[in-house]
Image 1 (cartoon, one colour):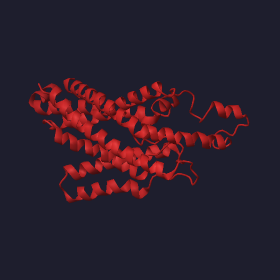
Image 2: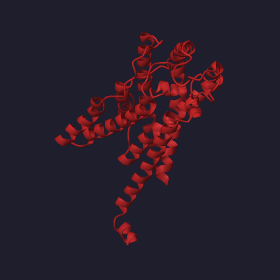
Image 3: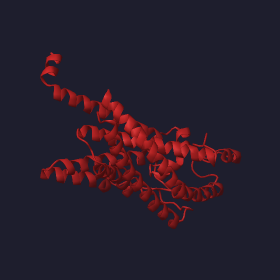
Image 4: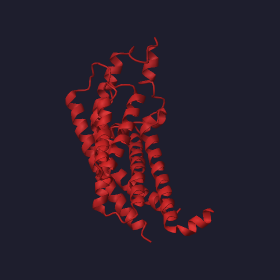
Length: 238
Length: 60
């Protein structure tokens, strides 16, 4: 499968590079904000020991388990940062594969500027559209049930992707109407709402986080679009 | 039957093979994103915790 191999190889190369660059951007931008917010999260957990899932009478149970899912977590410092870099590289490779797959289906060379546009499409589909309903959240903020948010997130990304493709590749009027409708539909339905509750996380901090995440993501998708198109252009050339 | 079709339509046969391979690669990519960003396994969640928040993936 020569095409499959070219796609995977290009995506791995581009993902490795973009994942590393984005990790640096996150260590400067989002990670300090997450750590600041975790101070509030821990404080809130300590002040409300009977909240949520941890209603067991034994206070030691709560000390052991900061939340229900803290069976294992990387130690702060090197280990945590190493896992962040690894997860960034995997995410970048994961998103690079569909981008490069699109170039292969196009069946003609995709220049870096066209790659950049595809990358910006990824930004709209995977950051801007889901972020409109579910803005980037710091740890410790009140949120709706996880599965419901994940379902809405994935459905919104899918509807936006289909809508954009209809707008870009079908010239008929019905396609434009349907495309715009698909892009708007998830927001008309509405994202799962967080329960009304008080958060220790300050509004200024959480707003700053939304801006930093969105800008980092813009950089991520711009770099990923350009690097996948350049890598695939070189690797797939016979 | 299939062979004679392939012989008559070599260009289309190649194209559909490219599409199949590209779709496989795209599915592989979305699977990777799904594991890193959406898996409910707590060890995976904790390992990729900061990245989930930084990518605005829904998190705990």
